[in-house]
Length: 228
Ligand code: MN
Image 1: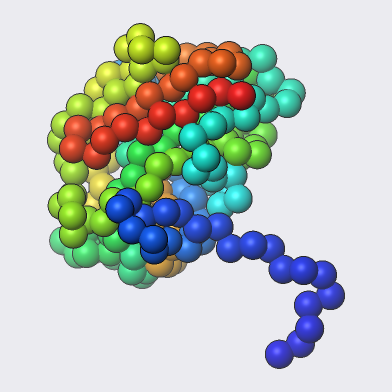
Image 2: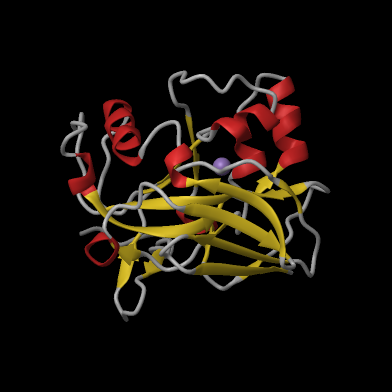
């Protein structure tokens, strides 16, 4: 094998709950507007249109329990999401087999520079700088599906400094986990190591330094993240 001319990038790994093992991360796909009440609050039609996706970068993940307030924004929002971890890849994965491709699930935050995202939307430009910035994806450990099954219903919520801000139920997802995998795999070849952030319920809003965000999904515990 040829020598690298520079040091190679580090492989991002996600911790596995109650284990010393880790999950190597390849890509991070995110679905937009996957809860009707959040689509409405963002000024969009909640009908079941085709899903749409954007990406964050693997090295945007942060497992430290902190979120570093980013540069170039004064309106940074939380979005609590169920994260799907793909354990087996494929193309054109059928709806019936889709859940067999899931390794496990985690809690994650799709932190968003809303002011930058809104400007990009107005200009019809990609959202990249609003979504895929340094440390924009605080995440908790992955719980294997073998320990959890495949969560399809139950409370998903987020509190800031103990005050309830976001509240929904996983059964309100417009596109369900199996449907997301089926659809995405028709456009991309999914691979082991991919993460999918499955969308957020209504109630998104801004945070400031010092705030403590506590996200939870019924049966999956809490993700506690302090804004620094
Ligand atoms: Mn989101």
